[in-house]
Amino acid sequence: MSLAGRMAIASQHVRALTVEAGEFPHLAQQFGVSGVPRTIVNRGGAFVGALPEQQFVITVLRLAGVDLDVRPQDGAAAS
Amino acid sequence: MGIIDDRTMDQVRARFGERLQGPVELRLYMRPSSGRLILPAGYGCPTCGEAQELVEALRDAAPEKIALEVIDITSTQAPVAEVPTITLAAPGGEPRIAWQGLPAGYEFATLIDAIERVSRDEPGLSAASLEALAQVGEDLEVMVFATPT
Image (cartoon, rainbow over all chains, first blue to last red):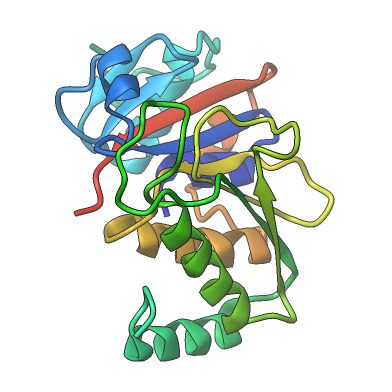
């Protein structure tokens, strides 16, 4: 299962939506999808490619503006 | 042969028999299929028929645990803009996991896994990730664009 979905099981604040890029080209264009998987948080910040679990979770939460009480040991970077 | 071949269905039935614990609710939002006819955005739905076949097959693989509701958005107000959309939730819970488009190929495997994890309330994340998620105080959406392969 996608990490986004697993986050949604763990937290009632998280919604996970997987979009088939080829079926919705207007959305892919709207959200600037040039490669998959492309992860977009709150229809704003985004990153491309698969990340290891903790890095994925922390990158998503940082893009959502969550003030995390963790050390930046993961090297997560968002583009 | 349906959208899912017999051998795969046998595997899905066996997995669900072993792994499903609590009940889950699947919803499919759809429009009546337009077949292969290409219509402007907002009309028809080339993959809704296949999506319906797929979720009905999953429901039939474990009907005592999986409830399915099929909602035609042309005859009722629906909280989704695009079809087909499949949502997954524990009974009575707000659906917070959804797929837009036909979950084929790899996404079919993630749908199966998601049904099992929701049924078991088992995110399968590390303690560090769960700790980070516990600090989330506002709703957020994670949208992932994928392809079927």
